[in-house]
Length: 109
Length: 118
Image (tube, rainbow over all chains, first blue to last red; front, side, top):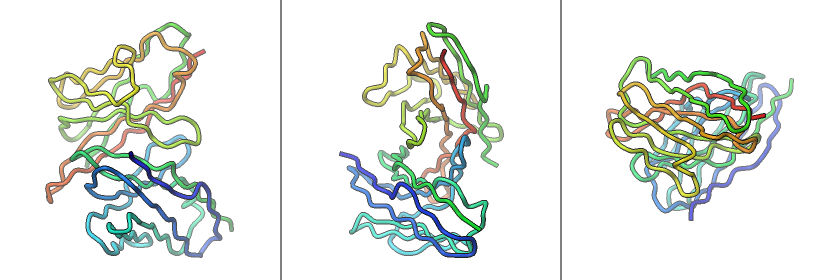
């Protein structure tokens, strides 16, 4: 079956670093995506990993270990606007995505 | 680039009526679009894959006769919720598939349509 796990909620303070973990067990794998979703809005693309290792993009970095079925999203220098849900998604069947339940991050001043 | 729009952004309808939601790729052509549904505090669930010029493929458990999908052009896919019931109230999001230069695919999401059935 398809299973993607993320923590439900996390909190952090402005300026801090937070790591959001994602573990997955899927029947296929074409890459791992991270999306940011503010309440009532559509997801916006953050990162894509298909090979093991760390991908850095500004304040956001994403890591993938395919052998462990594990990824994390690292957010540095947190800002209030980073309060949102972060969705881990696995690509399968060429172009489909299966989403995790999302992690709701609250950033406090 | 790769902007996807949806219309309407929200709609309220009475139980038993039908509602049509449009998904458009504004600055690119999309042979494949996806329709998702998201209930409050839950993640996105794929409902169906919409292919231009052919029948949509539905995920297990999604009633194809209730959720009619039409992808008549390379920039427009529509989802019609027929005989809507309160349990169909949800956030419906479409996405368009874009091929990366590496050969892999990425999805760009529309802003979503909030459907409330009374």
